[in-house]
Image 1: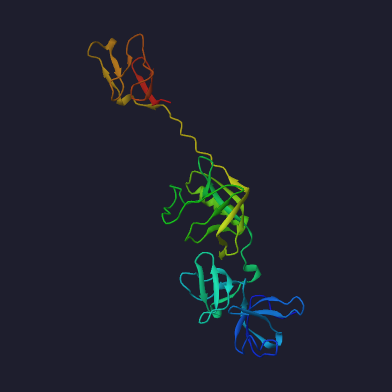
Image 2: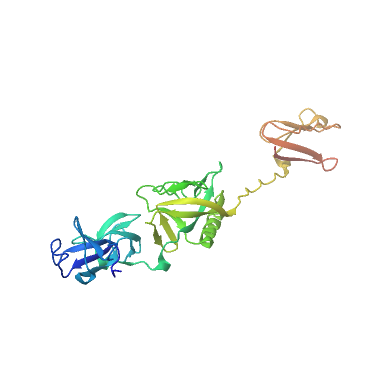
Length: 310
């Protein structure tokens, strides 16, 4: 079997009778397959293909088509550490074509990237912290939430178990947490900062091969939403109970007719609360949205209390 892999970039360093009619020494090509009989690599130079012996080839690139790589030198707009996939290795000035899912494709040199270690590869199973809207729809945790910091440049995404959510065109991708613990922590923090909503965490499966990893977050071109694995219910606080408040000092007493027929008026709207006679007729509800309560403290003093009706 050949020592060269499919996708390897190679140079013709010598030639024998088998390749003399097709390629010249110095020609650069890509291994596209193998001979089923001899196992020799099938090399493609421009639009021509031919089987070539290993001894006539030399590897000129440490990268192959399909390799997962990350950027190690600045290349605007791609961010350092962003992960992509090598899709071509036949360029001239910039020999490698890399597909970065977030920022598209770019021609780059070999010294601008390095292979992604297995432990650095974005996992296929991730976790997404979500907000449950009043109508039950799952949505982005912060974006579109009017109680949070404004996120005007971003678009609110919606999610549904068993369905696919795609990243908006031109965005960095669907942000997902690499571990359940991180997603749970995000849900707890965001739901406790005065944000009145239920928060949940769902498993998601990465779709496509061009996700990029930034620290403990993976940005995905699309995700398939799986089952719910964590949730924080929202319990709205009970409204404070209205207490009876003493408003005696705010009431007006009219005793122009006689002390026996004096009237007690509520503050503001002229409501007669009681007649200060031997028979008391308190008025329980006023036109101002309050209930009133009249009581005698002793033979000469009374008290008026009120609270909001409801």
